[in-house]
Length: 495
Image (cartoon, rainbow, N blue to C red):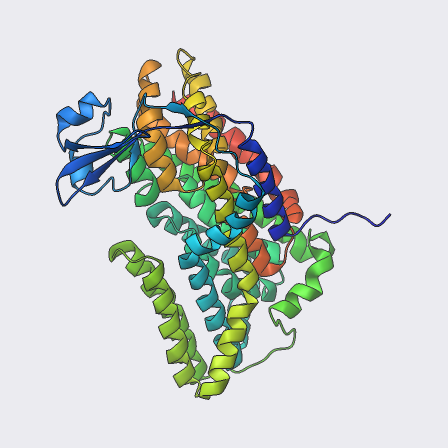
C-alpha cells in the first residue's frame, strides 16, 4: 500500500466543512436576541425571532434588557455591531445543513471574503512585477551581506515588529502581504521557510493574543463588557512580553539547529522546491543600483502607507488593495516595463496566489455553515451556564478553554466580542472577579487556538510556501503546549 499523505489545505477545509454540516444535525439550534444602535434616529433596534422592535437609546432601555454597558459606548461608535442580549437565548427548530448547503458554502465564503481575496491577488501581481525588475534579488543579496554573522537579528526584529502591529491595531490578514517578501530573505540567511513563516505568523498571533490597544479585540471587548479598556492593561502587557519572549527563543532554537545542520529542518525534503518557488539563486550578485533602490523604496513605502492608513485613517481592505495596485503601477514606470509585459506579469503573479485566495474563501464558508446551522449561540449558551460558583482559578482557566473552543466556530475577534461579552462578562460578577478577567481569557483563548485553527489564516500562510499543515503541527505543537501552560499559570496567579 502506498503511504497515505496528509490532505491539502483545501481538502482539509472541505472535510471540516462536512463535519460542521453533520454537527448541525446533532447540536440543537438556538439564537440570542440582538441589539443594535441606530445613529441616524438615535434609537436601539432589538432583533428577535418573532419581530423587530424599536426602543429609545437610553440607559433605562439598556437596564431593562439586562445590558450593563454604558450608553456612551453605543453613541460614540465604540460598539458598532449588534450585541447579544443576556438571558434571551431561545431554542429553535433544527436548521440542518444538507449536501447542497455544504457545496454552496465555499462559494458563499469566496463571495463574502472578496475583500481579502482581492488584496491577496493584487499583492501577488505586485510581487510578480518586483521579481521582474530584479529588485528582490539585489535587495536580498544586500540584506544577506549586511546581516552576515548576525542573521538571528532578523528573527528577533521581524517577530517583534509584527507582534507590535498585532497588539496595537490587530495586524493579521494584512500579514499575507509579508510572506512572499520576507520568506526569500530568510532563505538567503540560510534558514528554512518554516522559520520565516513562524516569525510572521507567530508574531501576529502573539501580538493579537496579547492585544493591548487593539480596537478590534481589546477595546471593543472591554466596551461590550461595560469596562474601560485600560482595565487589565498591565497584565496584558506582562503577558505580551512573556509570550513573545518564549516564542522568539523557541524560533531561535529551531533556526540555529537548521542553520547548523539543514537536514534537521522539518521541511528538508522540500528545500530545493521552495528555493525554486521563490527563485532563490545561490550565486546571485545583482548590483543594487540606484533605480533598484528607488523601486525597493516605493515597494517598502506601500506597506508603511498601509499601516498608517489602517492605524490612523480608518482604512480597510479597499484602501489597502488600492495602495498596492498604485505601487505596482509606479514600479512599472520606474522599471520602464512595457505595457503588455506589465499586464502579463501582473496577472501571472496574481495567479500564483490564487490557491491562497481560495483557501481564505473556503475557510469563510465553514463559518457560514456554522452561522446558518444556528449552532454557535447554542454552544455559547451552554458554556455560560456551567461556571457559576466555581473557584476563581478554575473559573479563569475554564473560560480560557471555552473561548478557545468558541473561536473555532467564531474566528472573528470583533464578532466574538460583541456576541459573547454581554453574556459572559456578568459571569465574573458571580465569582467576585473583575470583568477584565473575561476580556483577557477571551483574548488568550482565541489566540492560543489561532496557532493551529484551520478556520484562521494558518492554512493560507502555509499555502504560499507550499508547506503541509501536518509539518506545521509538528513544529508548533510544543510551543502551543508551553504557551498554554504559561497562560494557565498566569491566569491562576493573577486571581
